[in-house]
Amino acid sequence: MAKLEKAYVQVYTGEGKGKTTAAIGLAMRAIGAGLKVFILQFIKMGEYSEIKSLRKFPEDITIEQFGCGCFTGKPAHEDILPAQAGLERVKEIISSGKYDVVILEEANVAVKKNLFSEQDLLDIIDLRPPTVELVITGRGATTKVIDKANLVTEMIPIKHYFKEGIKARIGIEK
Image (cartoon, rainbow, N blue to C red; front, side, top):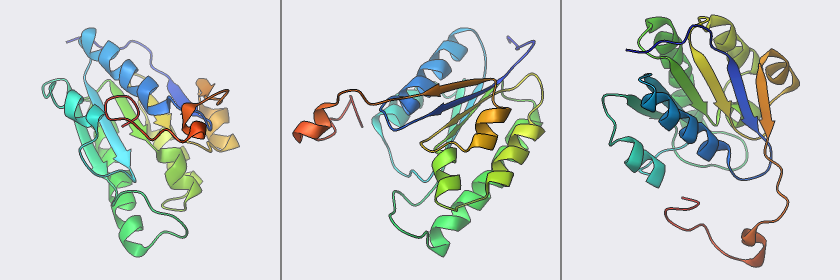
């Protein structure tokens, strides 16, 4: 099994489309190189198209969801509990040595929505062994998370057909 000699912290943030797509592209590249990938999704719940495709690689990619789905406004207790459980799970995963790439999808949004604190996310970054690539996605990455990262990509919407009233399409946006 391949191993990373040196790994980094990557953050994909911004208002534009493509954060999850970039992280999943990295996951596919990683398994092509023989690396093991763990994807933990905060907030999301359900069988999105990307989940269906990634589940075709059960030996290489593990996906777990810790959310009740999308919500607006202040999070309810039932939104916070899964996020807290996800934090505990990612601590186990990062420390286990079983995975080379760990993707925390929508972790920035979870912080922004007060499902857990910025410090909780910073603690996860600090816990990361030097051989585990950590990828954090979601809008609204905080300055402290950006400062701790080695690579930060901000997705900026220049033009999008959603503004013309086109809804998310299965296989492309969902």
